[in-house]
Image (tube, rainbow, N blue to C red; front, side, top):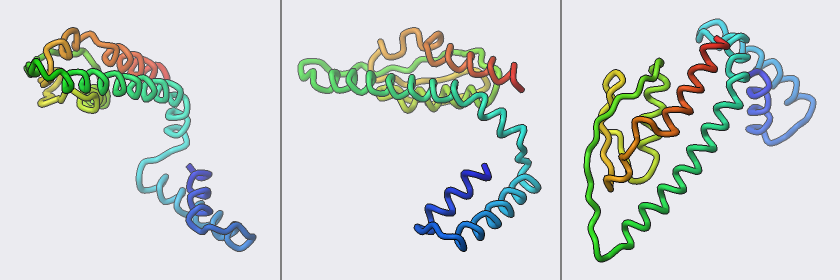
Length: 158
């Protein structure tokens, strides 16, 4: 975090000389101390995030691919002039352990075109889909499996 703060300082200054470098090192150190002291940030938390970084990047890449595939599916539905979409709602439960995992699943569903998470209560989701096939197997989707894997990794490390 300290290095990120310092790099941010250098980028915002637009110059890199001795005075700016020394001042940036001091300001970054003071800000890092403040974050650790008053915002419950710690080096242990930073190491935890770095260990989980690979899984997070993998999930983000997977989500991006799913968004692209869903975009193409929605374009196909829109360009079918002879038929109309058949929107529907589906309710399902996913046995995710953490609030972060539940919210991540709800947001991933909403970010994917053609589906919107309407309600999330405990482990119960209410999802609106543009077509019925968008909701088939949503309770056991790759999203759920990958988030469970992230949760298990976080549990082992944390």
